[in-house]
Image (tube, rainbow, N blue to C red; front, side, top):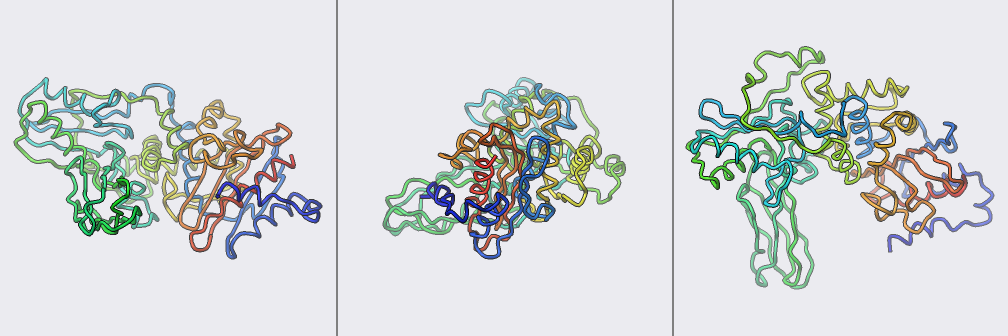
Length: 476
């Protein structure tokens, strides 16, 4: 039913057809729920504005923030298309303790079928060296301890969308728990592949096939409360639960891999963090005394695939954790790898692009922060600048394609823009966004950025954004 909405919006009356393109777009926006605030700028190939609705208004960009993060990575980090030699996790032995050290890689895996960037490889290295260790310590001190960004809603923390950010990341810092119906009137059944969490199961099995499950957990708690109902005829439902202390989880998982290889662990599992130094001076942040332990020789270190591959995942899937880690890695260029350091690199890029400082404010790398603000006119200026860079085509190829893949796979199908729109999506509470490039009816490439904020009652405004862009494409 959803896919019928866009064509219906484009049925034009004779009076509508006589309006200018600007008026037609504004008329479409006016059909949205009262209170919705729209912004849109579209540029032609020469950089001339075709349509401008509230062009300098400041909007919450949601995951359009990832455009800034991934573009800054291309602008400031060398060799994104080469194996990620600097980012891989490492293991060393320090006074009888095993130190599992993270370097910002987002893709480390403990999956049984892992082929590349595998935690098991590091466990093999330890087992080849010794059959007994004391403590297992997860070290994420490469970045300061900022597991959540300013302005992120606290209710997202238990979920995969708000999982903790750490230089030592494993399995996307999430656990998948399967919930299945029990007998009618009894508790739901739980399949917990790894026993990192304790489940407080309050979910009941009821008649039918509906699933109305919920879960919650206190911050830094490993007790997960499962509530709601699941129908006796329902299919199992996977719950993807975020992890608050990824360095500890990685060390805990590593201990299990060591035990499986006959390595005796006599001590405890713990995590080693580095406190954030609260100062605006990047040199002070970078050189603060005693913030990191002395670096010791490594026993083994992984080399993950190129970061360019992760940029594709970040933009196509809108992967929050990976975007946050990339922002911090960008920030290592000028400081201690904090969010502020990453934003400073974004600022340098935007200054080079000629984007006014009033057109943006960022507090994270993924768009989960409600503090972020972007103006459509500033966004299209950045997008035009990106297109002129040597890496511009590679960056554009990382964006979802309308009606084809990623977060746009189900949008623009059956329209002029199916397969011809390349853009970053954005969805947050009361917020929708879409920015990128489209190929118009004439074959010309247009640059656009559009936002909807203050959408009432969590009603999506995407169909109005999409309808406006189809109108623009048809008229050009």
